[in-house]
Length: 195
Ligand code: GRF
Image (cartoon, rainbow, N blue to C red; front, side, top):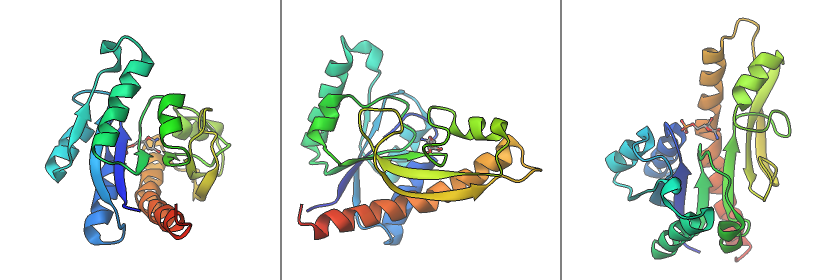
């Protein structure tokens, strides 16, 4: 199997950059062949351009339907012969069209210890809940929200003196090491299964 990744992102793109950095450093044996961004002008787009990664930048509302949008994305994934899709801050539900094209080949990172604190505000929710620890989870996606099979998760402490900013920074720091490592293990596993 080749190891051609498409990263899907909507925002800042620090995880995108972490993945690209690990590829460059030789700790992630893969090629990031495409960034898909559903928010034209998001900072992640500049990161991709700076890294020489082709970008598909689309505004879903310009499409007649979600299915039309995803079909356009899927056509591009096929053009770039993408093997695995990596969601990294992609604020959109992936529909069955893409899931059927990439069964068990779409990963997501969530900034909490699932099933604790699913949804769009995992860090904020954990912060407000006053828990002593939260976490980071990498999982395969299914049709639910943050509900697919878990590949790996780690605990991250929340200290009493934490502000939302310090907690966020700690979680992102963990994400930037965890995600590339789990992607590498995942690619190794599917390769050794001969799939
Ligand atoms: C990360 O916290 C990730 O877990 C969540 O969205 C955030 C994306 O951050 N799904 P960035 O755009 O990679 O900086």
